[in-house]
Length: 156
Length: 271
Length: 143
Image 1 (spheres, each protein chain N blue to C red):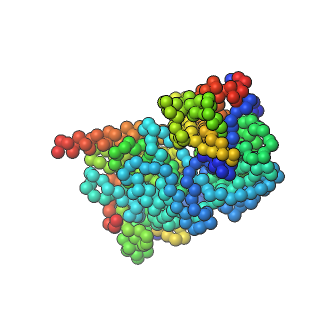
Image 2 (image 1 turned 135 degrees about the vertical axis):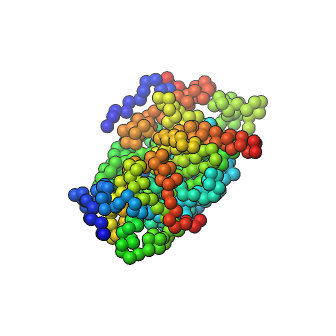
Image 3 (image 1 turned 90 degrees about the vertical axis):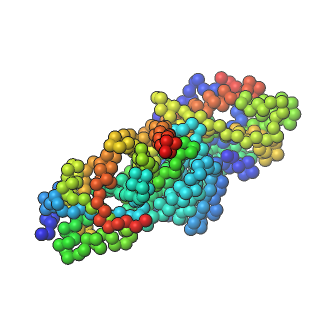
C-alpha cells in the first residue's frame, strides 16, 4: 500500500522487517487459519537451514524461495480441516509435502516454484500429474482422503 | 522490442486520480550474482537514476490457485543475511527502479513539487523492458543464463480526494462497490480478489484494495489500489511484458467499471 | 575384486552405465537421514519417505549410493562406513532388484568416497514407491 506520509510505495504491501543489516531477520506476515500452521512454518524454516551435505551425498538446504512457494501451494491445496502435511527435504534443495493414511498416499514433490509432481496412491494404483499453479485437484484428493478417514472412524 | 501502442478500446481519462504505477517481476536468483555486485547493477541505470536508497527486501510472492478464496498463508521466517532492496531514483524522485536479488520493479509516482505529468503506461513498459534486457545481459556476463521470470505484477495506485460535504464526500460516490447503506463509514479498509483465467486456466489474480487515508495536505482520501499479479506463460522477458500489458488492460477495464459516472465526470473521461 | 574404472565423458564426468562388475546379488546401500522419516498409518509408525530416493540434478545425475562389496573388500564394515555423521540410518537393495526395475547400477568413485556408486533411471512416482517399499533396513534410522 502507498505510504501516504512519504509518498513512496512498497510493492507489495507487508509489515516491515527489522533492519536488514542484522544477521537474522524475522518477518511475520498476515494471518493463518490451519491449526497446523505454526508447526508447518517451523518445519519449513528448519529445512531452509539444513547444513550442506545434510544427506551425506552433498544435499542442499531447501531454498527460501521454494519454502515460500510451498506455503502458497498449501494455502491453495489444503481445505480447512485437512490434516497437516509432512514435509521432507530432497537432495537438490527441493521438498515434498505428503500425507499417508490407510486409504491413500498423497505426495506433492516441489521441484521448483510452479513445478510440482503430484502423486496419489491407493493400494497399487498410482496417479501422477504435473502441476504448476493450480492445485484444485490436490484439494479434491485431500477431501477424498479426509472423507475416507472419517467414514472409517465412524464405522469403527 | 515490440511497439507499445495504447489499445484504442481502453477507457481513457484526461485527469485520472493516479498517484503511482508500478510494474515488476520476480525472477530466479541469477547464477554468479551476490549482493557485493549490487553497485554493478546500479551502474546499468545510474545515468538516469543517479540517487540510491536502501530498503528492506520484499519476500517471495507466488499466486497459486485451488480452493476458492484460500487464506493468505504466510509465515515468520528467520534467515541469514539478506540482499537489501535498492531504490535507484531519478533526480526528481518521480521514477525509481527497485532491485533485489530476485526482483526488478519500475515505479512512476507523483511527488510533492513534481512537475512531470504521468508519462503513460506505454513509456513505462518500454523503459521497463529495456531495463530487464540490460539486467539480463549483465547476469549473462556473470554466467551464461537468461532471466527466468516466475511472477509479474502491475499496480495502479489511485488517490481519490473525498469532498468534505455533499456529492463526492462518500466512498460510494466514487466506487460503486463501496455502498454501505444509509451512513458512509468514517474509514474503510478492505481487499477483494478475483482469479483471472487465460485459455481456461487460472493465470493471475486481480486484487483491489480500498482504504481511507489522508494526503500531505490532510485531505481525506480514498486510496484505490488495483493490482494484477501472476505468472507469464513462459518465463522470458517478452512473455513477461505481454503479461504486464494484459494486466494493465484488466486494471483499466476494472477501474472504469467499478467507478461511478460522477467520478468519470470529475476525471474527464475521454473514451 | 576391485571394480573397473567407469566410463567418462569428454568433460570428465562419469557416464551413465551399468557396471558389469556389480553383480546381481551385490548390495547397494542408500543412506537415510532422520529427515527422510514420515509417519504412515499403514505401518503404524515411521517409515522412509519416497523423497529418500531420487536423482541429483547434476550432469549425468543419478541416485548416489554406496557399494557394499567395494566397502567390504576395502576391509571396512559397511554398516559403520555408511552412517558417518550426520546420517542415522541406511537402506539396502540388491543390484539385481534395482535392475529388474530398469535402473542401471554404476560405479562412480569420488575423492571423498571411493565406494560411491550411482543408480540411474526414471524416478517416477511409481518407481520411487517401489524403492520405498522394497528398501531393506540396513541400519535402523533413529528419529
